[in-house]
Image (cartoon, rainbow, N blue to C red; front, top):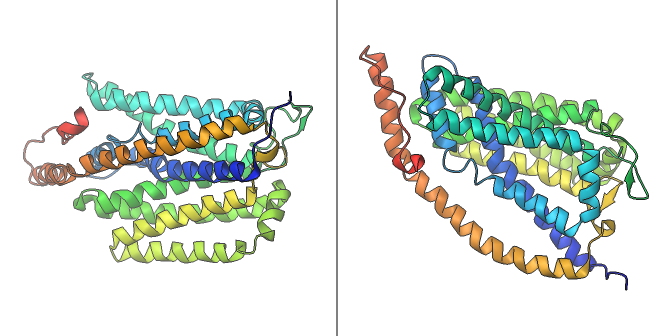
Length: 369
């Protein structure tokens, strides 16, 4: 007996849920990746304080954020097995590099933050953490660019376009660099709003630079999409809200600049989140149910009714359990911020006064646990 296909409305519900999971990953883990960029570029007399603030900001959630990526992967291979098989083959190289980067980044962070090794060894692990944080978002963005390129070919369930199609185009590379810039923007805006007040000027400069660079790479990707991914450009152009969305993104960028320059950091953070969310939503809208543009659609990727009917209740239960736990996690570590800021200010004041330097401000007790 042939399997019963799932109802279209169920598949669309799963599609929107996947989109929500991807957006949550970008807004949380994206900021963590961006923090690695600023860790590498830390400079000036407050260099150690900058790195300590970055370490403190990501310590409680740097691994929890990957729950969203795991969620997206598990749902795709459970509900859309044919699409998952195509993804795993066509984008084997960049996905392998993304996985390697995530593992190296997490391992290096632990060895630098909690190791008892000499400072020279910790510094080397710090460089591994920073470079892995930079390279991984680039390959992640290149993978998304390949998925939306329309260049992947599948014949009789066999990928015939090779291992380098789609994700090596100028559009995909530009999208990878755009992703890195957006992640850096998220990290800098979060650190401005929640980091130590004495470091807000440092991270404000970085946020302004990231917004400017993201605009450049965004324009480049928008130019190349017409050449390297014409089907995606056609779909975006057919969206009634495409150009209004571009205008909205530009307005939000101006709001970010104005808010940062006027030191309204919470407003800047909100504007950055809306700006990044707009980019993700517009991309998902243009894909219109295609996990791989013109190669794997949610309605033709092996979804079975019994599978989807079992997955949807599990998703409801999982969200009911995970979301309160993640909210409590954020709340616990946010309560330690005031004490940590006092430690940062004391350390910098001692350095300015020429007093003996203490070690970098330790993480709160909750972080060390």
